[in-house]
Amino acid sequence: MKRAAVTRRLIGLLLLAGGHPSAGFAQDALQPYQLVRSLQLIQDRIAAGDHAALPMQAKLLEMADARLRTANADDYKDPKNFRALLVYGMSGGNPVTVEAATSRATTDPQSLAIAKGVIDYLNGRPGEAIEALRPIDPMALPPDLGAFLALVKGSLLAGDQPATALGLLDEARLLSPGTLVEEAALRRSVGLAVAQGDAARFALASTQYVERYLYSPYASQFADSFVSGVIALHMSISQEKLGDITSMMDPEREKVIYLRIARRAAIDGLNDLSAFASARAEQGRDGNTNQDDPRALLYASLSTVTSGTIEDVRAKLGKIDRTRLSEGDRALLDAAQAIAGEVVAPPTALPAEKPAPVAAEQPPAPEIATPQNPDDSGLPPVEGAISEQPAATAASGGPAANAPDSAVVAATSSDAATVMPASAPSPAAGPDPTDAAMTRTRRQLDLIDQMLGAAPK
Image 1: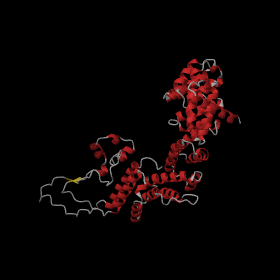
Image 2 (image 1 turned 180 degrees about the vertical axis):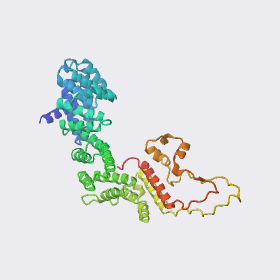
Image 3 (image 1 turned 45 degrees about the vertical axis):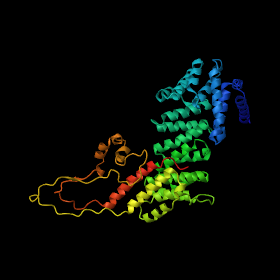
Image 4 (image 1 turned 90 degrees about the vertical axis):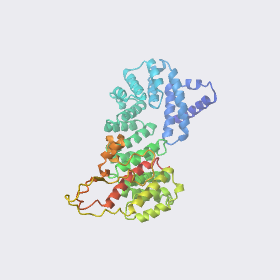
């Protein structure tokens, strides 16, 4: 009842502020902590999926900013108002306002240390921020402030101390359940669990997020982390567990998630996972199948594009309605068809062996370099795609990613031209043309990942 009354009063104030150019009295009638609490209520509604509250959040941030800038030293003698200033800063507030208000306030040293850390955090100085906030225990603070502080500290430590960061995110959730703070903490926990290789933690955090915050406007960020996590931890997450998590989603979201997993898995050569995700995407729910979705057929075909059923795959690819695909997926279809065509193309015949000439009867012949095609992929050019040749070095963070073409060619020994004196004896057995074709195919599949662009909508 109290929360509902505050929300009704807030809506009335917003109407006044929006309908009268001099309605500054609206925010002046409230203490800073009251405005910030109203902001938190709106943010919690947004986290629960009320997207209509987003404009109200923007208006409340504006009102809270104006009220905090005009608050005087006496206002900040009330600890609730100074805590509200800090929460406002950690809720996406203006760092200039927080810094100016802090300079006028007289409060305890710990609160001032938190303020310094928040200001550093907002101004993009993570090193200074964590040093200021490190000795402060969020669990020893009032819950409204402690939850935000735990979230900020967890975010700051995520890169260098992921285990510590996960513990802080747990504290944030404990102090502020059912709020935007918990939503953000869960979302970040998913990504950190992947980085830690912790499949159990990944599955638990994903389950909790889908149960509580699937309709948050930030859920697309969760989806990115979830798909990446399924691919990275595929050896540790069973298909049954994956199905349990996605079954809590609405059918459309579930379909898109499986389409994205199928595509990523196929490109990474995870054929079992790709086949499972493609089948689930086509299966649908509630009697509504997605067998006519060209994306599901495309991604399912990609996982078998180099298999023994390649003729069947080519036939399926040929039946896909290109007009129903996005531009990125049309490029993917072209790439898959090109790869399928190359797999079934007859291998280039090896040159017939000739007996080595007697050195005394002929002068040495000049060296002959086998011609090298700089682009043997057969794929259409891809805007922004890196060269195939340095792929292995670039993936390992080596310097070839930025090397000039000549250095790249020299560094890629497997693709370098073979140079032999004509008088040298031929090897007993030449390279298998089929193996060479499959190697090129794998490099082409790597290029497809760059063609994909944005996730399917």
